[in-house]
Image 1: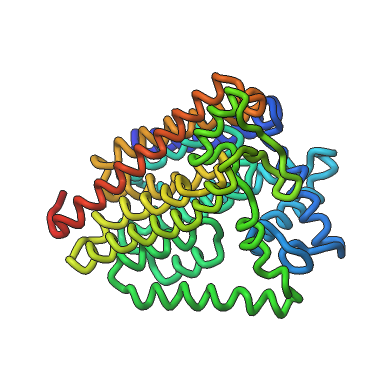
Image 2 (image 1 turned 180 degrees about the vertical axis):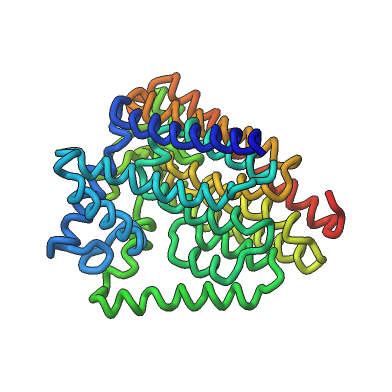
Length: 407
């Protein structure tokens, strides 16, 4: 018992120390890894809480409206700690908020007497956080990791509950992918689907009552109009053209990101949406057939969820480094449910996080200047994303072919 408690105490100490280290690195590394927090989130939250514009309601916004909630919570916390934190109050408040949510989710994951698979998943979370660096904390995506992990990995290896679908319904980014995977893999499909549908339908109604009008779906139109982001997998050939002086890298003040400027880049960006829809559709079809043939939740959901998440990253014209946080929960779930077969995906994810950290923020200045080293590193990272996607799809096809096998 003492040995178990000691190991758990060490695990908790490493988890908290990882947050402290990553938060500190955000302030000392180049290329403003905390930039979105104090340059974007803070003005949005301050305006919403002081009678100014409310993004997503009074004006179009690049994010779903509920993403504003944690930004406003951080602002309230920043006002409370301002006497101690001074001008950096909002950044400190953001780091504290993310850490608090992570701590709650980590407690759900580990419990008082975690099984070995849960301990491995917890160690993976620590390693992924350190490997990805400040971007794992100082982006809005960091808020969604604990909410998903506490619901998915805290389920004692059972299918997600109806409450889980409600929680996914108010998260952004990958909510649809994870919900779709759960609907296919879990047995109470109609109940899960109904819960998700009700939530999706209720959110716009509430926002309309709060005054939203044409800005309600601004996050969809903003994403549609944007160009090919330099970190996107589809942008990799253009980076090599930029190295040869045949393509450019320009900053978009509308989207607040760097994009490719070159002949054919707009066409590639336009093709990513149908490619994304096709890829997700094929994966859902494979998952649906496997479920219909009797595949269990334990064998079907992990590869299906990870494949869907990877498709959303690989086939996307946006390639933000924080997208790597999307991999945390599917991989942790795979570890909890089937640790032996999760080893390779987990290792690849850690490598992907480390390479992403190397690109942003460490080598990002060189990437903007189209230098060889960061282009090579990013190309390897994007190639490994394809490898991990292929591995997940291969595993999914194997489940489809032998749905009742223990694998």
